[in-house]
Structure formats: structure tokens, C-alpha cells
Image (cartoon, rainbow over all chains, first blue to last red; front, side, top):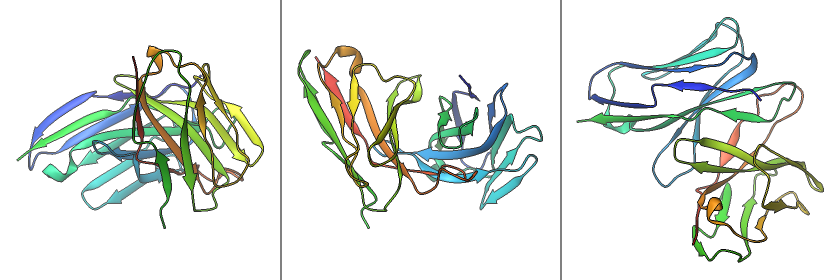
Length: 112
Length: 116
């Protein structure tokens, strides 16, 4: 079973601060996705990274896939209260190209 | 375009009762799946289907049954509910799972189940 470890588990910051969330594994993934989930809703895809070393930007969010495709990070610049939510990473691998393994998530709270 | 629709949104059961959580998608997605989400445990895959008539077990399948008679519907059945099945259940579907494409999931809004 492939495991994805996310850190930190909880993060509470002030508006305007920067933050980084990490997603690590000892296994190689063919692709990795980041989702954001708001209370009472299902997760919504933010980005998919496929190539080792790949960097993708989505406004103030920067996603990076590790060179060895075992880890990823999400960096948020100048966080806003609207960024509050549960951030989940999910990987595809282990010989399957459709079974997603999810990390346990990082609960981010951005205080105004 | 409704996406993935789950019903009911909330349900309370007594131990031993049975029920079905409904999931329907209108995007003609081949892949559908059920996850449960528990505090501190993340999302865990219960069952999944890669097309009509094809289902398989995920990480935590015990106590749950599924069937896929149509592309659109993927119901999750609890035959004899237990308190350990108290959770939030999410149905998710995907447009692509073959040929190396990343399996990007579209989730429903969830069904919160409490078993007393």
C-alpha cells in the first residue's frame, strides 16, 4: 500500500503570510494531484502534476512535483481568508493508473 | 450540468439496518468510486468501477456492496449497518483512467451517515 504523508496536519496563520504544505512518500507516483475541500463540500481539484521537477502556478498557489516523483509541495503566497480549507494531496501509482491514494490532509485556517 | 449527485445528504440509522447511498453522474464518466472520510484518516477508497458491469474492491470494502448496471449510477449498499460505518461518504467519478492519463476526480457533495 502506497502512503502519502502530509505535513503539517493543521496550520493557522494570519492574512498576508506565506505558507508551504508538504506531501511525501517513499513510493514513486506517476502523477500527483492537489485538492481543496471546504466544509460540507466534496474535494475540488486544484492541479495535477505529472513530470518530475514540474512546477505549476495557480494565481498565488505554486505546486511542485519532486524530481523523483515521490513528493510534492504547495506554497501559498500572501494567504487570504478565502484560502481556508482542507488541502489534500493524492497520488496515482503502484502499477495502477486510476486508483488514487489520498494523504490525510492539511487543515488551513487563514485569519483576517 | 449537475456533475455528481449524491442522495441522501444526511441519514441516521440504527445498528443492523440496511440502506443504499445513491450516486449519479451526468458526465458520461467511465470511472466511479466511493470513499469514506473520517477525522484524522483522510479519504479511504471503498469500492470502484471502471465501467458498467465492472466493480472492484478498494482499501476498506468490508460491510459495503456496490453494483454498476449503468454508466450513470453507482449505488453503495450497507447491508447491516454498524457504528463503525458512521462517516461522511463521497462518490467521485473520472473522465480518464486509461492510457497513462491522470485520474482526475469530480466529487459529489457527500452523504453524512450516523449509525446509532
